[in-house]
Image (cartoon, rainbow, N blue to C red; front, side):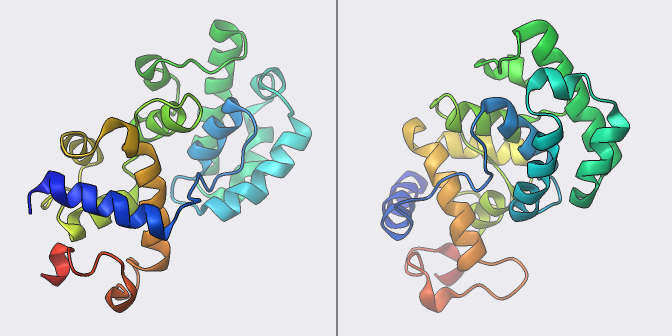
Length: 210
């Protein structure tokens, strides 16, 4: 089985296993997803979803958050860890959205990457979930599972994993596949315990089991 054939098999099986997969960060506006994905670094999505409720009560839009003192933001987001750097990035990012984009989130990948605190993972998430464009979000689940399954071999650097996956995954499937890999990584192909291969829909094609 070639890597492209393996990728198609993984896409098909995970689609049946997780038909309703979606982003696990709560948001109803694009700028809120930018905030949440920055807070999610080294923090669970579940905790982020709780913390941002207080943040948005106090600062309900881009202008309010851009005008907030960094220390006020930090006081609220501290439970997500790395509070000072995250608050600084969020403040700077919202200022750029206010001053350069009239409060809107740009739909261009390079412009997203130029925003403070936004890396390839965040930019891809925005492109895929907000704008419906081809995207591959190489978070820890995507990197771990891609290596275990055999979609990539011994590649741990996020950008290199992303580039390798672009070669074998149809562009329109990338974003939803990454959401499904997150669910599969949390429920079956776990990181902190032995993976539950006996319950895995990919067991017979997974490189780890061959």
